[in-house]
Length: 85
Image (cartoon, rainbow, N blue to C red; front, side):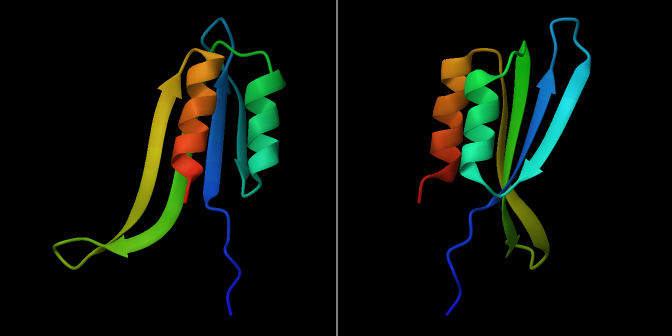
């Protein structure tokens, strides 16, 4: 039996000058939560990949949710929404 795996997530962080500062790829929720909650950033991009699925044309495409946020509360709410089962 397969374990229920956390989806792969990417977190991109920009500083106040608009330069990309860091990119994180992880499958651990706590690592993402800590980076959003306790890090200093001006803008953050969250992308959560759920895996490949077949579209209506029969092609396999990557299924994901993403968004760019400037407020900490909005980013945390989006992370929770992307990861709920």
